[in-house]
Amino acid sequence: MFNIVPSYSAIKKRIQLYHKIRSFQDKAPLIVLIVAGIIGSITGIVGVLFQYAVNWIISLRKTLLFNLVDDLVINYLLIFTITGTMGLLAYYLVKRFAPESGGSGIPEIEGALLNLRPVRWRAVLPVKFIGGVGALGSGMVLGREGPTVQIGGNIGAMVSDLLKVKNQAYRHTFLATGAAAGITAAFNAPLAGILFIIEEMRPQFRYNLTSIKAIFVGVIMASIMYQFLYNQESVFQIGHFSAVPIESLWLYLILGTFFGAIGVLSNKCILTLQERFKQFYQLNQYCFILTGFCLAGSFGVISFIFPEITGSGFDFIPDAVSGNYAINTLMIVLCLRFITTVLCFSSGAPGGIFAPTLALGTTVGITFGLIAQLLYPNYHIELGACAIIGMGGLFAATVRAPLTGIVLVMEMSDNYQLILPMIITCLGATLIAQALGGMPLYTSILEKILLRSKYQQDLNTQIPTKAS
Image (cartoon, rainbow, N blue to C red):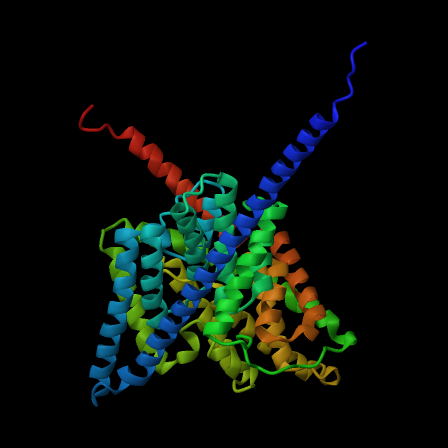
């Protein structure tokens, strides 16, 4: 008979080996979390610097440009030339050094998470930062969240390369961590940053315990950097509003159906106009750059004539919530902001669409609130509450990430008591958008990018080289 029971020394060696393996497994995620914290910190710092730079350029444009000369016509020509040059620089940098930095950049990060798009951080980081400052500072209808998400994702790739990280799962986690930190750095909304990755990028994000912890650490550090370097207040200082009456909740389901239809129309217009711009840009190599010059110059002038339809909308939202606009004025602003938002974003400018979408949603919500006040005065509807609910509703209809939209608006406005009508509106918007066959905006843009990339690859393989 052989003794198959291991000896005490053998058992002790196995236990020691087990503890060594567990120790290594425990240290690896710890190192990942430390790196995620570094990525979040850098993204938060860069995001705040980006915001300071954009705000400084906008302030400089508003305070100095209009007082250049006494003659009004010459002054407008100078404004057009100066802001147009800012746009020309932004579009030139995109075309010459990093074409993938055009647009919001979020579809590029989603493609990179699928290993279908390159992450050229050495070119993208300076181009997105400088180009974004030029485009947003000129007065174009763009948001800073797209640039900060792409900058954050590229910072994640940069840190991975500098630390020579070979593990593809960890590199994927760091890329997603940077993107989540980018949302946080744009809006001081850490929960929205986490949910954006889980909900909007769920087909691309590889969810596991280590990766989600890394996302948490990244957004925490980005939020700390934002609050330390900028401020601790919510983005929108528009006051607190009462919870809506229970008997009025059905109105917000109707509001959601409106947003569903508007969201589908908005996405279709953006995708269609993007194709028209692509066709126009193929006519001449300078068409793209000249488009940037003309758009930025035009919006620079319009920002002094009709500022409500230019910029991200962050200045317009508090004024609209305060009830400074009549319903006919709001309808004009709504139509014009819709056109300017679609035009600027579709042109390929290095800027996002989150903030302009929130401004559009605010306008629709307040217009709806004014009508509801006339029809149902006993409901005591507050325009500010309708504005906040409108932000989340249109976000849900266009991006099709309702949970992210709800939490994002709650964090930005600090009005958590409106959560119930917000959920109802976002649910209605999402259901109607799906029923009408609308596709999520970033998913549709990514599909078109991948199709163009595949077409270009096929075209290159069909062209014989000189050597052959």
